[in-house]
Length: 245
Image 1 (cartoon, one colour):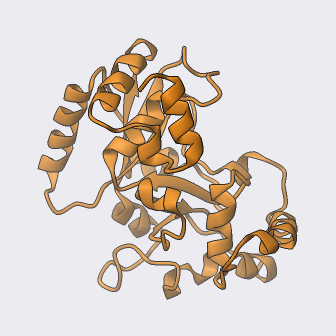
Image 2 (spheres, rainbow, N blue to C red):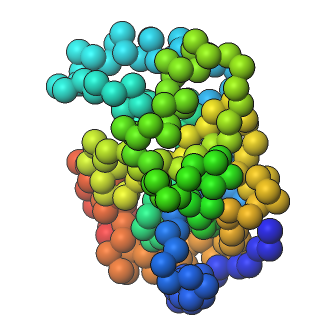
């Protein structure tokens, strides 16, 4: 898997044009990471937590705070992911600017001096590796039969299979998910990071040098692509005012 460098929004646009020219009908998803060393693997698989326990405890305390609790069990995972609970989900976006923003902005500011990464994923190629037949569905939704094996309830009672991660299109059931054009990959028992599946055949990686992050962030802000655009919440308005934006 070769890597190239992004140092400005204009260079970023050139890269997107080049990627699109390879196949104008291709579906691409995007992810930004503030540290280029991070792999493409979800938070739960980097911990020792038990998914069943996490879901049970989250439901126990969250139902009173949710006006319309989800019926579908995968929607519970989406809400948990939204509130930074460890899950088998990894966030992507079908909007490349969303991913670019997350590649240069670190809320904790602990990775500002580290190079970031911008990833481009072919969700259909990923699903081919998991034996999802594209003549039936290109990218399954949460109600599709192809993902029943990935349900928490299935994994709880079925102990023997080990399937590769797949790309899914969930309902965008929060304002933040809608603003960020959220889509997801979900893991089964095969915990291989996506960049190591079939020698990285599903993804392309671009490096964002640490000393280019502030320039890119300022260019995004100039284009009106700021924190409030991705986090449509009162706290975002306050943060932007304090920054003088």
